[in-house]
Image 1: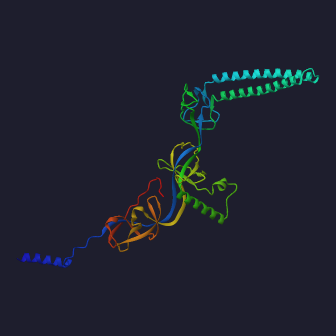
Image 2: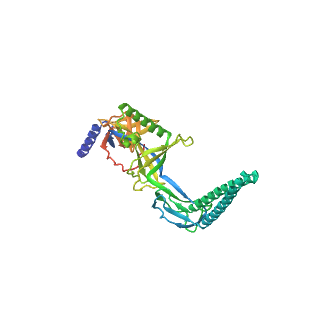
Length: 397
């Protein structure tokens, strides 16, 4: 009986300590937080493009015939004037000999007409022949002269046709795979007419399109920078071509298909004259040095433009931001570890970070893990989340 009474007394004491009908207080919820950072944030625009040669020249067969030889290695660099293809020359040599024979006959007729005219002119002065005979001799001479000029043009035309049988490189550049081999008939559909393509790849061009919004951003920033330069005074060196030609241009970087950045920067050097009304885009071409020939025409690339830097911006991870009915919120942990819902005004996105324009101060703790478990006023147990290092990749804006 004594033992039972002691147990009952302990039980009553326990209930009295917890309070009548009150469950024990739950432990604070564990969450992961980050401190809002303040730093400079460079803003970029990424635009999808494709590489082109500075010149992409199609190599055409300008006469019909069978290819006798191919005199280059495919995929190699060739020099201007270098022989690339030779088409069978025999038909064109025969046509040239025929044209030369016609020229010789025309010159003989001219000599005869000139001799007749020279003989008739003094006789006409002596009235030994009629004026009609003189006029006829003069007409024959003029016709013979015209016949010689026509025959000379015929010879020149056949020489040109013969020269077309040797196809030479018009520029220095990289030549591709041949679309015709020796023995193949070319120069007339459906046989190949364009035999190859020769590209000058240093510098390499990149053609890309930007939206109307991106165009306005770049145009506005460029105008603002130029106004600032004008107000500050032009300090460019007239002897420095960089100052004269490239100082006011936006520096462009090239991001390749594997996510790496090309080692050389470039500048836009050609644009369309208007926005395409069908696509709503603006076409731009930029040039990048390519001395090693690393880039080839037809490659996918992204062109990146740094157009502005936000100084001392407040930045949090994008995953910390939630949206409700068009309003953006953060879960902020106060000094007493109580959760507060904070409405914020968003700025641009940079990689995995979100710029906060208003509603948050640098150094405040923001929940990034455990958002679904907390409510306003909830007491939490915060731990700092580990920072993840972003590998080199395409940036988002």
